Every structure is written in structure tokens, then in C-alpha cells.
Picture 1: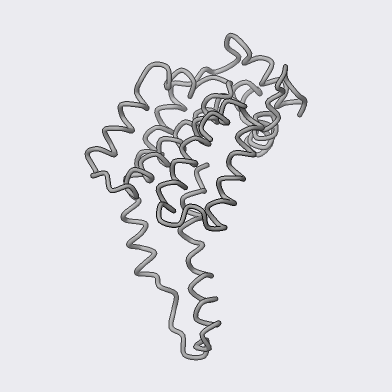
Picture 2: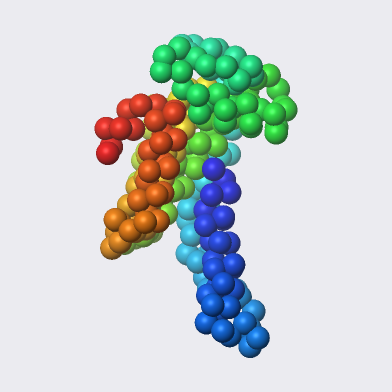
Amino acid sequence: PALWPTGVLLADVPREITRAASAGTSKTMGPPNVYGLMKRLSEDFDAVFVFFLFCALGVSGMAPSVTFGDAGEFSACAATLSLAHAPSYPLLAVMGKALGTALPWGNWAFRTNLLSALCGAGALALLVWALRLGGVGLPGRLGAALLLGLCPLWRYESGVTEVFALHGLFLAAVIWVLSRFTECLFAVRPMAALGLLFGLGMANHHTIALVA
């Protein structure tokens, strides 16, 4: 989640090179549009700030080990790469296994709690980015992130092993696509992106179908 906005921005570099080459200007082409990339990075600073702010808040406030409800089952599924109770929530197990293997700190419950903290922060950052694309001013964007990110339910779900922080990340990504491609929503790229998000989202929690 942390690399998603950066990856979208850096994707402009090969696109600039490809566009220039297809126009037959590859021999005279200057360096990539670094100024444009830096401008976009500065415009997205509020989203980056929100991500790191709520990452720090989530990691400092998350549970150190297993908690109530389905948390123990989901942590065990991530550790063993197995399926939980119906509807199985396979994406949570796969992502928990990937993060827990890449960052082998603490017990498996700690690692899957960390996944929730990262997903919660990523969801808020994408929401801020989407609001900027929709024309909302800086006070409104930051106010929305703080209002949602500091509410008790969001703080709880961002600190325990559950499906809802990841669910929020997919919902925020859907909102971002809708804001980014407002004028060409039914073109191939936004439709493919929405299809991918809804497909992966269904592998996490089926209630994302209600958004469609």
C-alpha cells in the first residue's frame, strides 16, 4: 500500500520516453519531465503526510499480539497460508503471509496487526488524494482524513487482525479511480482497474459488491 501512489507517479517516466520514441524524436529527446514529476509529488504531499502520520499512529497503537473475535484465526491462516471460515477471506491470508514473511518481526499476530495498520493508513492517503482530484481544498481533505482516521472504530480496526482495514483500502482505491477518470470512466483502463479492484476486493470481503 505504501508504494502504490509512488508507483503511479514514477510510471510517467517510461510513458514519456515511449511517447517521444513513437513520435520519432528519440534522438533529440531531452531528459524525462523531472519537473513535472516533482510538481506532482509536491501536490501529493498531503496524501504522503497523511499516510506516514497514520502509519505512526497505527503502529504505536496496534495490539502487540492476538485479540478477540476472528483475529486468532486470521493470524493462523496467514502463518499457514490456509483459509478461514466462509467466505474464506483468501486475500487477507495471502497478504498477511507475504508481509509476515518479508518482515519477520514478533509473532504472527503482531505481523498481521501491522498489515491492518498499513492498510488503514493507505486507505486514508488514497482518500485524501481522491478528494484532491475531485477539487476539494486542503482543509477539507485533511479534515476528512482526520475525522475518519481518528474515529474509535477506525482506530480499532487499524490495530487488530481483521478484514476491514484492507476492505477500506479497496474502497478508497475505487473512489480514487472514480475521481481520477471522471471524464473517461468507461474507457478501457479505468474499467480494467475497477474490475481488478472489485475482483481482489471480493477475495477479501464480499460486501464490496454493494458499492457496484
